[in-house]
Image 1 (cartoon, rainbow, N blue to C red):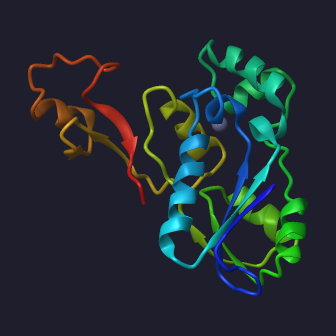
Image 2 (image 1 turned 90 degrees about the vertical axis):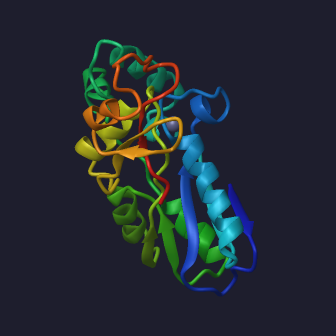
Length: 207
Ligand SMILES: [Zn+2]
């Protein structure tokens, strides 16, 4: 499926989010990943940037392994391994997503070239191999939460996602700290905080 906003026909450098469906976050509200937030961020960007844009929404749940396998992999992750190793323990690939449909969609829309909204170098490579002309990248970095920070770290460390080392700690007032120690010396110097509750969570900044 393809969502088009504004006049994109015949245009170059069109902002495009190629987004793979994530039933667990987008429908069930799971906080284990950042897919839903990335989709919302991309749609907000497209609405606000004034040039129009496209969201290509593809059915490739769980980096292509499907919903049932993804849930099985989540269960394995409960033992403490990351998303890549969980897949491997189940004999599943790291990432099987493919993007030839995107080339078809863009050709149908007569889009000349795109700026891809992604942090994922594999997606850039795969799209270029599929014949899509990419003239730029728009980072799509969202705030992490306590439930998906491990997943985001795995994306950065294991799958080379470009998250620009933008880890930081925020407090409830929006003050940014470089380390948890620095944050604890600040307003929360007594060391009593409930990490699940409020104050300091590990976050990524919106770009
Ligand atoms: Zn997801």
